[in-house]
Image (cartoon, rainbow, N blue to C red; front, side, top):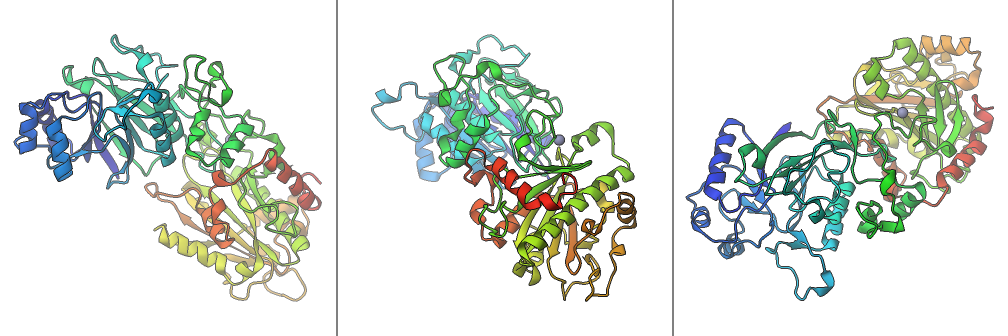
Length: 590
Ligand SMILES: [Zn+2]
């Protein structure tokens, strides 16, 4: 699963020496590929170049390079035009672009130096020229993400907030704001640049958490490699990349050196704005001359706090105006970029989409150890009570035309667990389409098989990672099996199973709390639940639940919350609409 990658600095035409060294390293450690971040060639087409082109210098593993400070030598350009490669295993990436390796590693690269005075340019840039335009860097931001960024030039202000001083000979003023913007937009795990006079590696840094379901910490490691004339450790570096795990956060104590927390109103404009220039919101200037969006917030960089969380009540990133209801253990909020719109379900005033969020900040479990089973049970019981209360509300509002789907991703690394809940036409639930869609999607993604479970029971697999879904049918299911479903037969027409089929613990708790029948699944309706485990090395799309629902509800264009057009105060308005919808059933606020 883990891929070993070799990174090489400025070889400056000393090709025989470089590939000898690389061969030696590669024979000891089996690297998947090598990346050259500095200039591979000198300006001269000397013997080293001839030896490479003729095949007498061996390139031992797939090696990718781009252009640095000089155009590629003429014979190399000619060979590339004729053969597409310099020699076996040596590939020119081009000046700019994206490469996804066979290991699935996504590399965004940008060679050359930024053109300083674009207006004065008289001819276009050739594909071997050591130059790039501001706009070319911006277009690369459209890649949305990258595991590795490879640039010749440094990101502007990358040295900020680092306690590792810059070696002599490195001139930060030659760095590029466009490259910094690229880094801030793509948030790579690694970024490599070139500085022939000396190498420099800064402390890993953490990006402020943006509102998203993917609550994994994003960490970037930056390193600039020196030239082959320095000692080996300055021009060669290596690392291991494991895409099945989030970026390692060890040693990442610092905030990103060039990011600012985006004000919410601005973020909404960004959401509306699909153009790739959105990365302009990052102010990376060291002077007042560059103020994207007309803002200069240089002095307001937040420090990284591992407890930052937009799902923790009362924390600075939490938006209180999204709250619908607050109980003892958990609360309800509206969503930023909800899947349905407020007109998708005409019988509801709200969007019909919300989150049930426990108070407990999951990252605390890493710090303070696992919670005891009774603690987990109490929390689960209350969240279940919300789920049931929402069913009662739907039954009353939609008169059986709406069921509901709720899902949970329980994965190590998520800072704050939560359930997402969305109404869904009963016709789809009744026909078994929802259940089938989840099963098919899981199979397509090569996830583990769904297994049935008791809807009102905490999974004993709570100790490991899993994805769980609850499907509530507003009418009794005729096809449901007793395993993994729970028809509440409390009504007159259906004599089978009494509500005591819920977990005894939950039942006892409900009794102790003096809860009424609204604390259980409504009479004559059916809820099923199923889950699959997430093995530690399983790649998993954290948006899985939402993706499945988006195709069922024909809302594919809203599958990614970031692509949902938003207006100012939308989530606050939805929270208000939710209070109107849910108020009469809200056991906590009623
Ligand atoms: Zn939290």
